[in-house]
Length: 221
Length: 362
Image 1 (cartoon, chains in turn cyan, orange):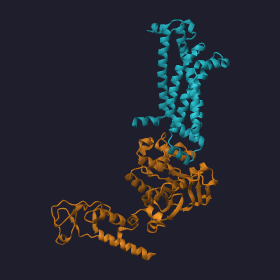
Image 2: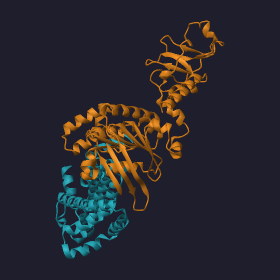
Image 3: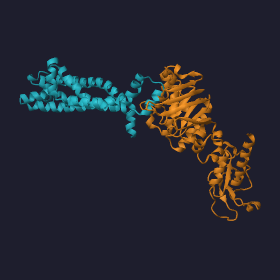
Image 4: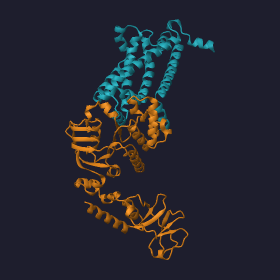
């Protein structure tokens, strides 16, 4: 069994990285991009929910970015960031905005009006209300978007292979194609699927831990 | 004391929500703001904790302009209860109640202890302390809302239609308990409702507002019913204000006749056979129904509801008499034992007598 496992997961020399190494790169870049996207989407979303008129154009913009082919973005970026993880990281981060910005706005909009009214009436300041009331109540909606963004980044990252071994597991697809090695493609595909599922499960767990109140809400509803 | 001095609120689009309102809400009393929708009652309430800023006039609390204090500090010193409670869904009942004490820097343990005390005060079992709001009924949520408003022991309570979203039975019990709590805590309360019955039931003073934010009348409930200031107030009070006014007259003066009671299994006496109706009571004295002495063996007619002979108002007695096909009301004591009966005619006489007494008093 262990001999078989070794043979399946042993990488040919032209892969230039171990199997575990590929997985780590994959997770680092795609989850890192999701987190970076979240850090950008939170203020944008907050801004859009304060000024609802700005939301449609903002949503249009992030959707437009999402529609730019990643190859084109890589080529544009490569002049500035070279053949590096950063060149993969930036487009991935931008792509998550199309999912995370609406996630943040919907989350903040899911906070009932009377809850905000009560918070104001009891003397919450703006920042404190945001951190202690709005964000926690927005969390279930927000986390749903984060899960989609993370899984989509895991998959989108494969294209990074085209700029030279920055696609994580995705490298296996390109190399499998180039060296006529179907095993690499299968290993890559299954690994990516398993990673996506595990990642979603892990994020669901995080969500459950962060929102104990919503768990009992589901059990009732 | 909360003083409104010529307070007005005009929105940028020109709508006038409140027009030159002057009003004094006395200490340790419930002042009700009542009126149809669009009369500015909620705006008036929300100006008191500066959720809305007036465009003219001043609001004073104990003589000091509310604008003199930082707004957060002002709000933390005023309890606020709203229609759907507005509880924080992500916090437990105890944490919700502890909100303002925590904002004021009280430590977690002391705040929780205070929460549990308040749960008892508002009639919530403390086993609910660690539940989330959505696990409670509407009535329980509203009790949490009241407890949360009282948590930091503010001198003033603002209540915006707090009992409007629950069913009538729960509403009545919430109102009754609210009055009991108020008797204990003696807060200065501004209470907004669109329900004139609620206003009369709980208000010490009632401010009737009309559309456009004009004060139509400011008076005690009884005075409001007896002397509505104008046609608007009269119409707002409704067609049954005469009957409603009886709420303020005790049934104490009624002469209850005791000769119409007959115990189950006991033959009526000769004199009782002359009466049109006899009240059948069980061995303990609880009323069972009306029987006709001339038609022995017929099923007893239900009494509808009795009234409490010493405590209830003439309104309750009259309603009991009107409700029952026999036209007689049954008076009972605290234990529910029948103490006597009284006819519609006798109640009518007592009402006339009360009118005469109030005319002479003027």
